Length: 264
Length: 359
Image 1 (cartoon, chains in turn purple, green):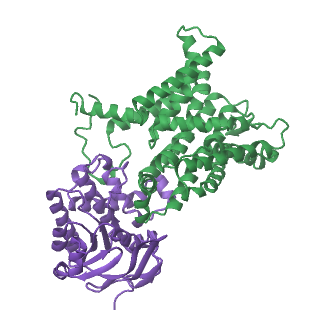
Image 2 (tube, each protein chain N blue to C red):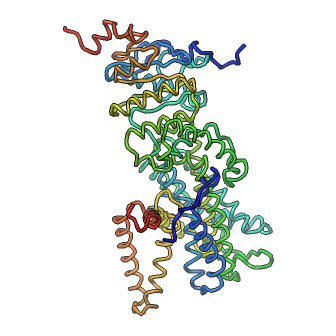
Image 3 (cartoon, rainbow over the protein chains, first blue to last red):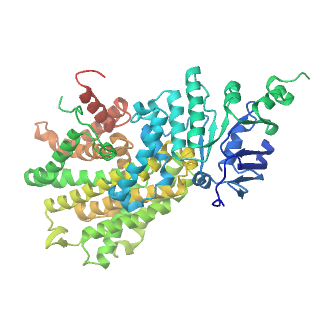
C-alpha cells in the first residue's frame, strides 16, 4: 500500500490529455497528450513557436488550457493553479532568467523555501525562537544545494551582478530548494558556452539521480537532448508529431521534416 | 582602517544571518542609540528636540512604512499622507472613547485601523501595477482627505474642524497635550520608532520580507514558487499602512499637538515622503532614516542654521532660498546616486572595508 498522492518510480507522474490552448484565434497547443513517468528525464522539443513553453505554462498553472485535463500524482484537474502546482511539488526555471535581481543568491534560494516555512507573522516580527530556528533549519538545506551546484563563492552576491551562466545555475538552485517532484526546465542551456553546457548537463543528471527528481526539459541543443533524456516528445505548430525514445524520434520522418523542412 | 571584518569568523548560521554581522556595525548602532537616548535629550536644546528630532523620527517612521510598500514590494503609493491621517483620526476617536487607556497603546492600535484601510485600498494592486496603481492610491488620498474635512464625527464636531489633543499621562507624566515637555514627547517617539524599526528589520530579513522582494523583482516567478501574490501584496499594504498610521498619530499627538489635521495630511505630504524614500534609497531601512533626515531636517537646519553661522537672511527670503537649495540638492543627489543615500553609504562602507586597496 502506498500513501495516496505518492507515485512509485516508473509510474505515470503527470499525464497531459488532449490539452488545447488558444489565445483568441491563435492556437498555441492543439489536442496534445503525453505523460511523464516518475524518475525519468523527459524532453520536449520542437521548432520555435511549437508551443513548448506554453505547454510548461499549462502544466504549472500559469495558463489555463481551454480543453483537456492534466493529471498530477493521480489527481485530475481541468486546470492547475500556480499555488497548487508549487505546493504539490512542481518547480520551474525560465527561458529568460527570472531571478529576483535585487536579492542575493542566498536570499533567492531561500525564497524557494517559502512554501516549506510556516512560522507566523508574530514570530517573524521577533525573528527569534521558533522563527530563527526555522530560518537556520532551511539555511542548512539551502547550503547543501549551494554545495551541490558549486556556487559557494557567490552566496552573498546580488544575482543581478552575476554572469549569465551562473544566473542559470542559481535559478536551478532556487527550483531545487522547493524539493520538487517534477522539475520543469525551460531551455536550461540557452546561450551557454560548451563548458557551461557540460556543467549544466552534469547537474541535471545529478539532480535526477541523487534527488530522484523527475525532470521535463525543453532544449534546442539536440546533442544534449539525445544524451540526457529517456523519452522525447516532439511538438510542431502546437501539435504532437512524435513521442518516444531519442533514437526512435531521431529516425521519425515527420520530426526530420519539421526540423529540416520538406520540399513542396 | 577601523571598519574591517578581518578576523571575525562566523561559526554558526545564526551569526551569519545576523542583521549586523560585522562587530563595528554593532558598535556603531550602540553609539547611535546611546546618542539618541542619552546625549540628545540631556544636551540638546528644546528647539533641537521639538523642531528637528521629533519631526525626523515621525518622518522616518512614515518613510519606513512607504519603503516597505514601494521599496520592498514594488507598489508605488501616493496615499501615504491619507493613511497617516487615518492613524491620527483613529487615535483621536479612540482616546475620546477610551480616555483611560494609555495613549501609547492607542497610538499603536490606531495603526491597525490604518492597516485595515490600507488593505482596502490595496485590493486593486493585484490587477494593476506601476503608475496605474499610483493613481488608484491617489484616489485613496483624495477620498480620505475629503472624509477628514466632511465627516465631522471624526473631529468630534469641533467647530474649527481641528483635532484638539487632550492631555494624557504615563505614570503621571504628561506625554501629550500642552503640558508635555519636548523631552518626554521625544522619548515616546524614539521608543516607538526604535521598536518598530526593529520589527520591520526582522520582517524584512525573514520569509515575509523575501516574499515581498520576490514579488517586487519578478512576480511571475514568485507566483510559480507558491508565493500568493494577493496575500503578499495585501500584507505589504497592511504593514506599510500600519507604520504610516502610527507615524500619523505620532505626528498630531506628539509633534503638532493638534491642529487642522486635514490640511496636514495632504498630497504634499504624500509626495514629501515619497521623495524621502527615493532620495534615501528604495528598499533600504537605513535609507528611510537618511531620506527623512535629509528632507525633514535640512529645511529647519538651513532656516535657522544659516543665520547662526552668520549668513543674514530674513524670514521669507530664507524660506525661498531653502526651497531652492533643497530642490537643487535633490536633483544633485539623484544625478550622482540614483539609488539614494543608502547606496552612497554602502559604497562608503565597502571602500572602508578594503582600504587602502581599491578592491
